[in-house]
Length: 130
Image 1 (cartoon, rainbow, N blue to C red):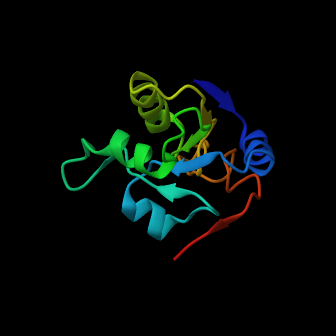
Image 2 (tube, rainbow, N blue to C red):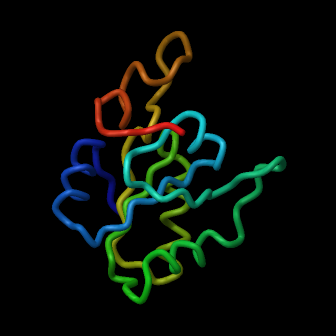
């Protein structure tokens, strides 16, 4: 697993059209907070009990098709879930995995707010909400 800044992740995604971009936040975060444009939502953990999704690896394999060598870029809120998800994918045989540093919303600022210090959205990269 390697880490990339949000801008470097975007550059990689633009330069490697086969790369698979996975937002591993919950479905509610993906829908209501917004998400990077082009990212597929496969929650690492979700639901009322916030349990790890037992189908995560299988869902990513399905999106990747037959190409386990296909680069996978993972993003979450701040970087913690994507690291855990990357370790699971590595264990399943995925060879090229990147985690986006600071995630979609970034680190907390002094007032405990996100989107003010760093992260995909803070850096002005393309995102959408619906």
